[in-house]
Length: 435
Image (tube, rainbow, N blue to C red; front, side):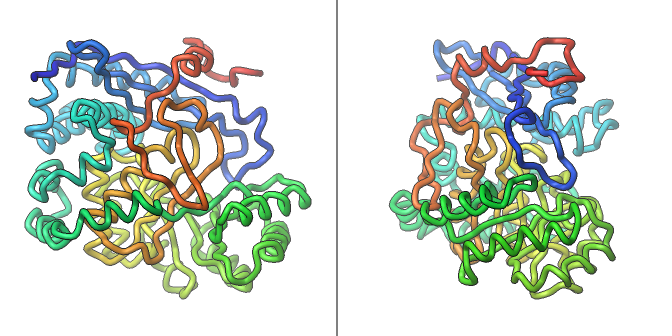
């Protein structure tokens, strides 16, 4: 059956979380978790594809405008036209000869492309009657390779090398698929580690997540060293020495400052420091990595594209690869990044704060384990406990493990009432909904 995309609509959806969340990090002090929400209409009744790119409030309207500009790439196309030449389609939409000047393959344009690409994959999975992770798992190694644009990464990963990685794991995919259906994917919580919480409340949250089975905890650092050490002391007192503690500076430090701060914070035995400096500073991350070992460096949620990831991996500048489902150009580019991480033997630990990102990354992490990197050593997915009630395919995390979705699609379709309630008024840019 031929599926034709007849229209693309995009909405500015904003949740006023800055008004009711008392936690923050060192940089993003008033986030309103938001997204540009794309829906692909088709000529088949009831068959649509949804996709988002995640934002923090102001600026979502810019993504909406960019998506409106890019919609001509999909309207009138059949799903088969796109998926039969998925790498070529992806390259064309990411490299339109004039729009690419606004990137290329980074920032506003690339994040906007991600919403469209993610919606196409949602449509594809719904048409096949499978959750996205299962759609990917059922594809042949060659089909996966054919989805990837290898421009500018062949010095680190060629199509033949990617094919070899995928073929190596092909025969045992079914075993790992059943394992994940039985026990799920391991996760960590960042919900007890935000700045701004009262000490007693932080202790309560630690105990809540310990009781829920969590053994990996992440805290925010970077506002001031004394405050960081105070909060780390409280968390360690609650979770003990056997649990993992990770730290996240959200890009606030210069390179030398990051090294100095982490030498002080090393007494709390952190597994990693996340985003210790500018997300573009490959050599800075490499210097930090060398100076603070055996503490690892985790980064990636604000890394722009597969080429940047390639350089981080080549330079030994990340010990934990943190993909974000919307920062780069959607599923196709994320497949390239996950394969690059496997090539350099670096675990993929997805970023999943905000709205909808937990829904997305569960699919990506599941396929990584099933088809690319059959090990869960040092692999853990972020879990942020908010806004899940707005999605039709609501996230399930039990005993600190993501339970794989079974509903067809990419798990990002929002409930109609939520879309209606949180669609942001056109033209109102500089304030949150509730202010």
